[in-house]
Amino acid sequence: MSTLMVDFIVSLDGHAAADGWPGYWGMAGPEYLTWVAGGAEHEHTALMGARTYRLMSELASELPDDPGIAALTTIPKVVFSSTLEAPLSWPNSELVDGDAAEAVRELKRHDSRPLRTIGSLSLCRSLLTAGVVDRFRVVVFPVITGATGKDRVFDGYPDIALDLVDSRTFDSRIQLLEYIPTVLEEPPGID
Image (tube, rainbow, N blue to C red; front, side, top):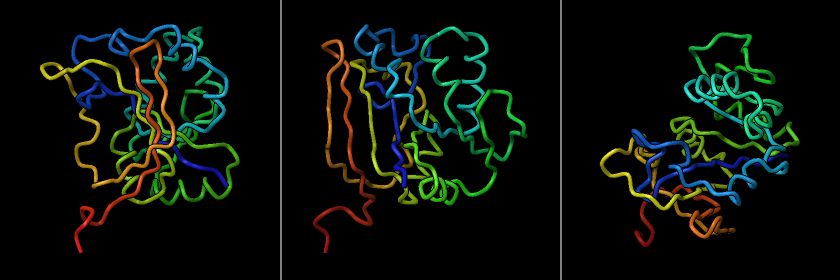
């Protein structure tokens, strides 16, 4: 049985991107980039929605020799969408147009590779709400994008308790935090 990890890269104030800022907010150092391009991080099945698929497959066609993109191209990818049509052009991509939570439950039962999301804010929110997420990992970049930030990652999420199971600092500034999530029916302490 496999496990599902939801992955996010965020600014300190919880944005997934910001107008005018480069990728990784221009702060990805050699230690972090080595970790991103590392082989162990790419031995999984990637899950994503249509918007992320469009962005990443376009990036893959523009930068086929980028080590991180090339590694992502080789791994299996499952794309959840009712707007895309099969066959998908990015190699190793499978389209699923049904219920994402049920499809993930089936993947977890039958796929031996770990499952990880890429971007896909609404997909991640629905999978967490459905209770199929085993790990929740956030890489926090030390910037606040209050004026230019967009795509607030955690808006619309249910209340979730997070138990820290791993942490790491890259390049003396970037924080990786890995949690086991528990969706809460109500705030703790209410009887």
